[in-house]
Length: 123
Image 1 (cartoon, rainbow, N blue to C red):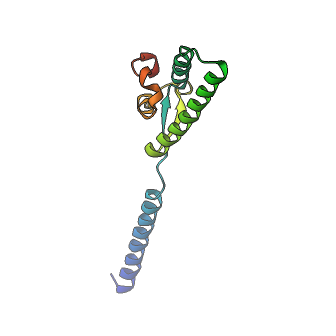
Image 2: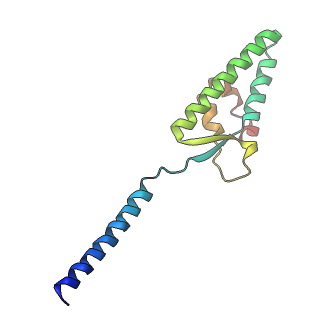
Image 3: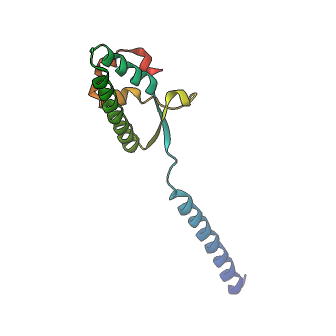
């Protein structure tokens, strides 16, 4: 083989190696798709509303407490989503295959400590 053909073959091999390296780097640098986690929002909200209803508060005070809880719940869900790099969906919206983050969310909200023994939260 002459030196001329050897140079051409070397350039082709280096070109293929460069293209393969470029594809690996390009594909490897893409961010991973976020995972989806679920939370039993219906159970959490219903459980909290029942707790507030048992306190015999005025309609205004009960409404104020429930609204404050809803604000804390939204903040806790956003933090959970950011810290776990997940999209958090209501459990009713996802049929199967996503981790249930309800227990972790309950730990973040002291208002819900009385609800942790309720198995309906895990559905």
